[in-house]
Image 1 (cartoon, rainbow over the protein chains, first blue to last red):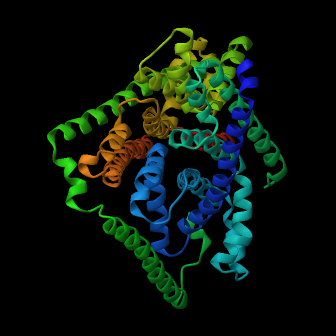
Image 2: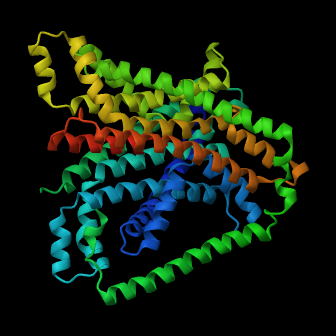
Image 3: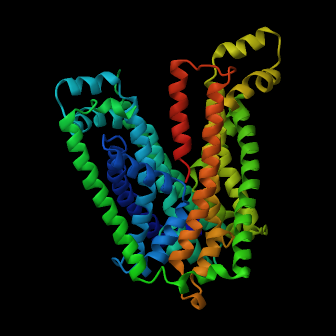
Amino acid sequence: MNILIDYWPLFRDGFLTTIELFLLAGVASLVFGVFLAMLRVSPVPVFRAAGTLYVTVVRNTPLTLVFLFFVFAYPYLDIIEMSFFTAAVVALSVYTSAFICEVVRSGINTVPLGQAEAARALGLTFGQSLAEIILPQALRSVVPPLVSTLIALLKNTTIAAGFSVPEAGRIRSVLSDDGENQLVGLLWVSLGFIVLVMVLTLVQRTLEKRWSVAR
Amino acid sequence: MSNILFDAPGPRARARHRIFAVLGALVLAGIVAYVGWRFYDSGQFTGRKWEWIQYTKIQEDLISAVLSTLQAFALGAVLALLFGAIFAAGRLSEHKSIRRVSTFVVELFRAIPLLIMMFLFYYGLPAVGVSMSPYMAVVLGLMLYNGSVLAEVFRAGILALPRGQSEAAYALGMRKTQVMVLILLPQALRSMMPTIISQLVVLLKDTALGFLITYEELLRFAQRIGGDGLFSRPFVPTALVVAGIYIGLCLLLTWLANYLQKRERRSKKHIELEGGPTKDLEAAVLAGRTSGN
């Protein structure tokens, strides 16, 4: 208990940074992931191939390697300078969007055939039928796996701690520098994550109840 | 399935698609060319940045790094499968207490980030007098986290089997263990094989977390060589090489999963699952696959 009280600012700032990372990367990967899913179902083969290539490469690369690339290798390319925090957001978004893409795509496949056929019969274009008819229904039906992906993202933010972002996973090394008991500190950090995951699970249940479509 | 979203294109749509295809290809080529040019311009393709790969010592190091990644993967996978089997059985047990304990354990280890678990084992436990090598910490973390996910996968697989299977087995006079081992497990394992393997891909990728607790594996190798001033810090080349190795290994496993799935479809022993459970199964599969790293 003492460690939590003595180092309260450290824990608070750490978890705030974690949540900030999570929110920024979550929004970015949702947007980019849906975009990728649209590419993967588009009528133009080049777009489909590009989407598939991206998803295959990213899903088979460890997130730590993505981080390593953006933090250590990317600066050598002199494109745009990024702070450690920005690099972490980019790495997490690049990685998570591939998973979001797959979830959304599987959701598109659950929308009954009749919906797409009706949309086409009404003369809607591919873009219109996707944006107005298919995606709203697809996104509702994939709320549980979508939130699971976001929970994974939340847990993955800890990797940023290994790359100089002062977030919850970093608390340990500060405690270690001060010669404190790291075990107790880490147990508190674990508890913090359990609470955050429980909150997200609650959101998942609520959204599922509210948005589940009766078919 | 994706072609339900558009009609078979007519002449005008085909022309339009062709224009889109050309534009898309141009944009993609532009992006690739820009990145390639940045690589070239910052000297990543110069011989000096790549000459590290010619040294026998470094090649040996690379091989031993791959081997230690695979070593952690192999032991972690075996232990995770065992852990998963035990706790799946626990969650399906008829005794309430065993069920509760197993559910608690599985939910707990699924909620704690894997990296924090590895930190706990490697940096935390010495405080109570238990110290372990980075290798053990990595393997234990992989076992607990992926084992918990696998437990859910196994459980979903067994629950998705038609009830008639276990009812028939009980009617034949089999005991609980017999029903599970002889009837339910073989069928569930077969239908869950692709999911199990994709979780193993996650486990393989998770070995890279060992990098952060000083386990001498592939990423650590990349960082060590990449930061070496002697070779003018070839971070980009080493990252590319190591990424290639990881993607190759994971694709090999994924290919195995697809192969098994295809073979499965051909086999006559396969049981078609009913509509309801299949949907649950798919949801569980999705959740399982994506809740990993």
